[in-house]
Image (cartoon, rainbow, N blue to C red; front, side, top):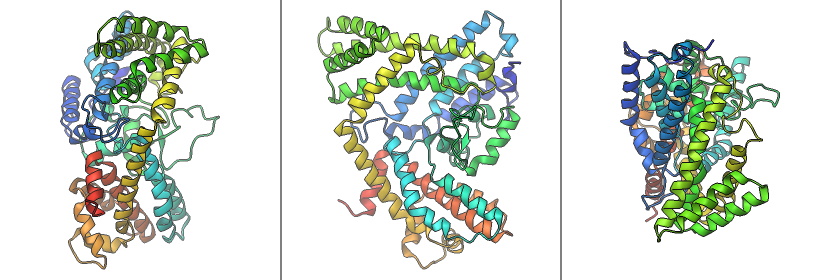
Length: 481
């Protein structure tokens, strides 16, 4: 039975509200006022360290996703009203439904590192090459300790912006959001410490990437139990956020590539037209031909604005209503979090699926593989990799010396004494809170877990940087003028 009152609730860790409207408005205020959200304005979407303010950042992209999610949520409710909102436990819950979907979308990239997705790969590669050997040296004489080391080995090599988002929300920013708002951000349902799913797994799509770390495992389990979401399953409104994200990507990167001078408007039109003709995709071809014909009637620079504005409007509207139909056709499976697909990829025979595929392939081929973009990624790699190398001495300390550092006591590593003072106090507090919960009586597991939380501390600090701050920090610590 579908009853959204079981999912959209008042539950939160501290100071729960007495009514759902106040609870949702509090979440909105906490999210919009968050420093972590503001930092997205200086994080890469595609073009790193971009000075042109009209080029999208993580923040402007997230705002677009939030608006599209709001449109989808409102459209779902409009259809459900025809059947009676009380049938689904949504009577007097419309604002909560829309606000949760919208704010989830605003938060969805909050865990992404500087310099985009390539930095995720950089972090994981660095950990595998530099940190695993330190973990392997820890003593593990019991079966429990061996299993713990194995889990944590997987966990630290699986940095992901989605999993980091949960950590930012719950521990680094301590936003005290409602359980509903937190769980809706959990896009993928596999722990980073868990093995990848087999193809036979009925939830293999939902588990294809890490959604949370070992450090947040117990809290996620608690929220899932409270909101009656089974392990491996997704919160229903997360499907809306995912669809909104997919829709928002479609023309955004192409638009920015023209603004950036990588492609001309004519080149964008010709490329998409060629791909549509090759794939016999009539729906998208019809849209771009009509909008291009309308656009070139105008004088420069309005041709550029008209083409993308009108094309985006046509696509967004059609794809929103398509996503709504898929959501409602599979409502029970989506409510239970068992729908093992994104809304837009569910029907591969759909004209919408083919249009999306063409636009994604065009972006990959002509933008992401462009030499300018790849040069920026190499610069990001050098900065992130370099910063991790610089902070590595903190991972080579014993737990005793790390404890001394945090008490401002001397240790035999003057570099570590100086490095620790550069790390954000919020991140150090999160580390200390985690370490304080470890059982000190089991010395083996204490040593392993303390070091694990130290890895999280360093990754929290570097992945939380903005592009320009990371670049400046790298210059300072490598003495580059």
